[in-house]
Image 1 (tube, rainbow, N blue to C red):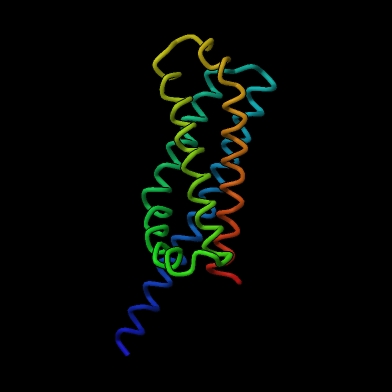
Image 2 (image 1 turned 90 degrees about the vertical axis):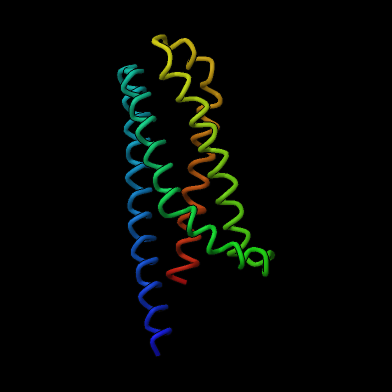
Length: 151
């Protein structure tokens, strides 16, 4: 009986972390949206870069505290049943999210080391690709959340 209670508590803690992370990811989406809108309306490149840096850092923290451990917990399922929908979504989410995160760091870190925006102008196409990959990763993450906690 004690083992069942411990598993129930552990499940509730993971559910709470998952719900918090879902809200957190939506907040990051709002930051990204505000950043893009700010850039388009007023060409505030420094503000745009700073908000993108914040969004990237928030996403990295989210990965370290919630998504990474969750991915490790789903690892056995992915290995044992690789052709299920949840395994496919997990792998796609992980790969696309990792690529988007790496590209974001590749764009932002060198930008922070320079005072000119010229460096960033040449990376517009990569920025757009990164945003699309991040959006697909976000929506696959929402789908994964639904598979794990709702459906």
